[in-house]
Image (tube, rainbow, N blue to C red; front, top):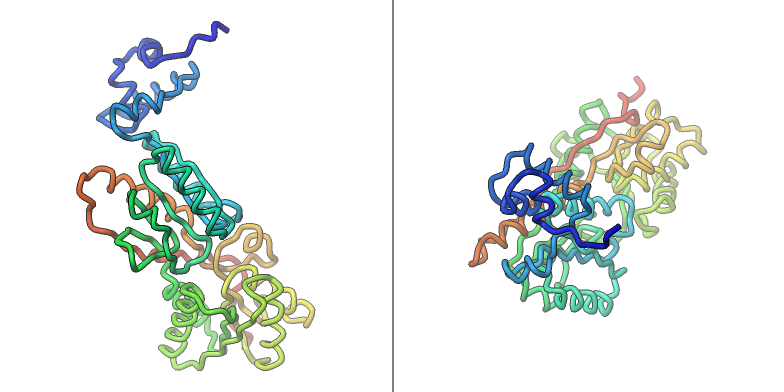
Length: 339
């Protein structure tokens, strides 16, 4: 190896295009047809070319780096798809996403933000693992910021959250459409935007069809342990229930476990719907769990699209607030009630 750094002129010569075309192809800017763009990307990868972000940043007054600040998003198997969606959308534009994870520690978060701002990131995507309101750090008021799975009423920023109300209505209506009337909702005791929205949606769907809501809550949290505790309550207090809508897939797994111990078969004796579409649970359970998929990947991509919109305008455009309608994923845990 010669040790000589590969430059943009080398890529242009090898690909048989101009330096401008290479720049546009790799940055995602300008008009370059898909075939030429792919050829340039392939040649750059083969030669080991890496754009000089510092130099391009001095020219454009941008670094092409987006900071993604989260509490626990990056360390959870399902919410981590927010990161994947953001990274892929950023890559399409030739941007780099730098992810920091605070573990919910405010002091760590402040230090991480200070480090990102010192690196002159172009914008911040601020994401939370659970759907909840946030009190954003003051530093975020100085830089284009987009929020994912959260919002802050005190700041005029674009945000996207799952539509928790329609999660509740869609899951419950799916059970009603299969002929169920005695439908329980297993949820957590702690109030929150996601929890309260799903409860409200469940109530609305039940009352819409003239059915009485049956809500069983647990202080054990949104885990399999919480699901087992709520399931014990359910079978003791409401043995005639034929279907259950669970706060999430892990609680549904706990319900499966207690049902099996009691000789209750899913879905023959009890139909079950969860929330999350967590592959480690929903696709692995027998029978496979019908569930409402949270749009983590889509929210990550949406956030980068909003960042692009902010960076394209010198004057900040109006904030966009999006409640994303979630998709019901049908598997084998729902059937018509016996008789």
